[in-house]
Length: 197
Image 1 (cartoon, rainbow, N blue to C red):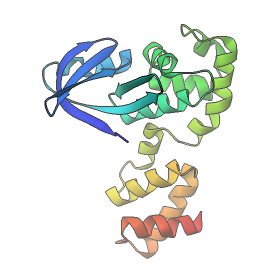
Image 2 (image 1 turned 30 degrees about the vertical axis):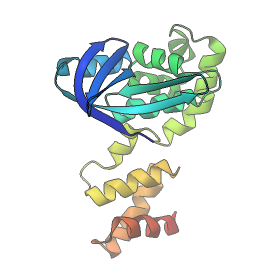
Image 3 (image 1 turned 90 degrees about the vertical axis):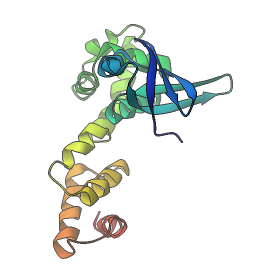
Image 4 (image 1 turned 90 degrees about the horizontal axis):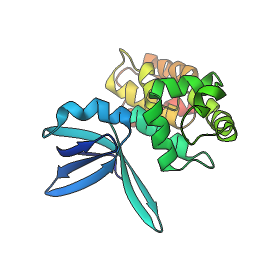
């Protein structure tokens, strides 16, 4: 699986970017949100987090300026009836934060205001994703756990939240393990925390 691509941003428009890395130009589909974040890097090095979408008849790279937007994109395409095109449209119409707030706040009208999204699809997005976003499955929410913490604790917290544990329980478990063994390795910190969760 690809995580990111780093190279020279040789072409850019509001729908796609071409990044040259290792002598190969990669056409990457982007949202307006990512376009705004990277437009100043034209003809300079840029780093995009990618989602490799593969179907029988189609293969495409979707690129994102940050992990939070990519995580939200991947959550959106997990909803029945929402493909990559619709997810990209949603992330072009609303910022990641606005979209997350609309889902958490069950704001059907805000979600259905996006072109191509009807009432039933908006309701399905809220039903399918509200709990996942509230429990902190997006990168920004994971990042908020780690402010001011060590890199080992941050990585462990991120891994445990991605496994589906709540931020609050993860923090308690990590505090407990670190109070007994402050210099514990990442692997042991995760293993010992899992025993407490």
